[in-house]
Image (tube, rainbow, N blue to C red; front, side, top):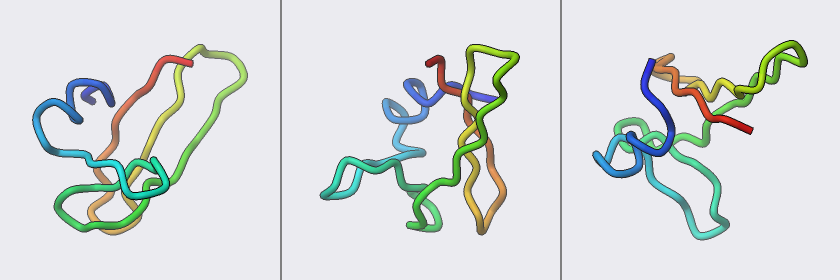
Length: 56
């Protein structure tokens, strides 16, 4: 699982006009999963189901 920062640099993720994270391949906004036990947030594409982690 790659980090959100790396994916933005490599072009796998983009930001839309409202600064939301969007999958570059599917052009869909990412879903967010927060686990209160960890310091990371998991971002998931609803179409291709690719995952990226983001440190909160």
